[in-house]
Image (cartoon, rainbow, N blue to C red):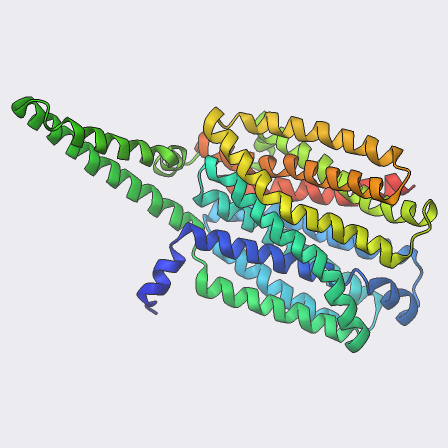
Length: 429
């Protein structure tokens, strides 16, 4: 079926990939957090299972995510297709909602979380991969930061929306919302999303063609200038300045037109440019999950605050992040534009230092305000680590002329999944 010209134009824009990836991040986080407020009541009061079973439900999400994260990147890179995994994730969201809608036994809740983990891992891997496919190094930081803004909005709204739905309609209300969000994402992907690798190749081809036309014009101007003196020089300089603008995507052009190098997951894990960001993501997200586990306990035990007041603390920090993240991405891009892609690693180191300082503030806090200030400093510092780390994967793949972009970003999800599974039990033990 031939698409209308306007729709074809929209589907071919990198900005569409960015917009749909940001929306996917919002949907992904909304569906994940919908059940946070209701799971204890559903398991303990409705199904009568022990509190120890809650850990199995949490682990099921992580297991599904780790398995899918390991496979998604490899399959996508191998087939050179980003669209099918995105469609698959959307369908799995709907399937997970159906499972929850008819769930009456504990194993069905585990199955729901398992499928949800697979869907979330596939969606997360693809939304970062597709943006890195179509944007150069000096624009990636801001794009990634905005994606995290949408992710954080979903993180704030999900528990509130899920809690209200559960209170008024029970678990079926949550399941219905999950299915509706999954269906919305599926329609969005089918209508507006094109394989990002096709857009990448089209961008590279257009830049090569443009550079060739300009080079021909410069040659013509040089011939004319030799015959008519200096009168043609301004035109040549103007054309040369245009060529410099086309150099913005040099890595993208080179990696697209040269034969892609196959690099398996185990080889990626041996690359220092990949290991560093992966470990950084593991530590930053692990510290976040530890704080999310310990902070409510400390606010309750030491300060005696109610659950409502504790919830406000997370909303405050979420608001700070929404305001700060675009600035973090913008500054990161400016630094990379002026000083080169290697500056991402210095930024990660600076963010790690600030994370350490925020822990000191939180540990010494004697009041609610100081504790929340320390948590806010940590949250922003963690983004100073994570945003350039996510961007560094795209830098490495584009510069190495490898076709393993999706596998690289699957490592980020694997690191986050391992951190979420392993560190909170250790911290609370």
